Length: 403
Image (cartoon, rainbow, N blue to C red; front, side, top):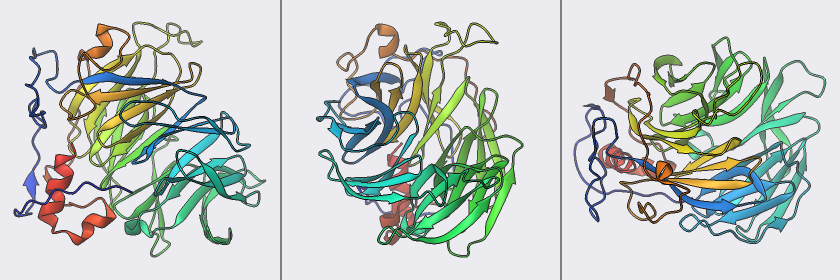
């Protein structure tokens, strides 16, 4: 795994968080774009577009991994150029989950099976695990050392009410421990050293050190979840994303984002994918006036940093983010679209990156309002394992610089 560290000395007392300004993080290589009150200074633009054989996406330092029916391919982070499609598995086209393993390796869960896949971008199956005894796999997480470092899967069905989450020994394939999840598990992530699982009744927080599990009852099954340091964001019904603060599992605010459906966390950045609207409330008829959009939110304050930017496809199905960029996988179109920021050095080049029209090159602000901000001060610095050895002040600056 890759970690970007900023080594600057300062104090690390609790500091107030102000709303992000338009000039924050502006590239020194070009002047900040001219703005009006309706347009954010830091904007989102459409980057590279890539034709693919799948739509399930996951980005890491080795590229963007794209899973299709028994296939994998790797997209170059900068150019979007695809590797040759590797036909190496038997997993399902529509029901696959990807998880980071580290050093170019990844996990792929589909049906009752879990694959350990190495060698990106050539891809080689290192091991396949038959987990029929658990049920149908709903999620996969390789936890960081801060969260115990274990391999966790969620599973449902197999004649059991609800479901379970289990820690797997990758060497032997045996189950180290398991926990019953009432309502069934969904996505799995981690935050502030805890394993976090969406369930049919809310969000479960598991302490991997003690085995103690606590559920925050929400009354709905969260449809999207992502972590930004000590905050967990989730999507239910309506046009808002919701924040929970770890370890207390207390509410820390909401942010209005119309049609929000899928979330992805990248350090303190929170990327929000909104589905295409429908012209008919009883049947899905794509509404061109409510296109698919991506919005970037500060995952600590709840402030809108940039966007939304419109993408004129009707079947967005997956979202991933890495190092200040996001990628959207589209099911029917079999295309992956990268989202860049105009203030980001390197890949984001306004007027040069791929775009199908001016409306996608600059993001006009839609009516999105910032809700109640989370806590007014930051008192947690580190969100990466290797950063724990640094002083808290250096860690804070390293994370703030990633915005």
